[in-house]
Length: 158
Image (tube, rainbow, N blue to C red; front, side):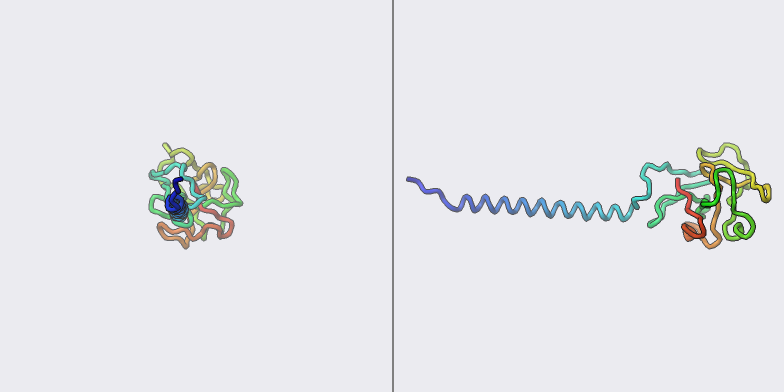
């Protein structure tokens, strides 16, 4: 009669435990890495959003905000919730805080999504994105977005 050694089942059990621990630690490490990636790329930022870079509008990216449209000099562009496509309702004192992003040059060969409207209050030409009039915020500096959610204005997103 041969006796089986009790060492073999113990070794097998130890190997199984080591493998399980390694798998669990590996999964939690990957989860931590994916959480770090989520912090760098906000969930509301569209990875498939086209980057815009031309003489009228550029795409910028800022932690906590994600992708947004800006003037070529870096000032964020906003839309106004009270506007409707092709019509600006920001007039008078509103314009002193939210200046219209106005055309200073040619309105030909504009990139996709960018258009213009003639303002009813002063006849000036204002840029639009997907029909919505664009504005800047007087308190912003280049590469800064401080007007998002202020007084019905939202940062313009590509």
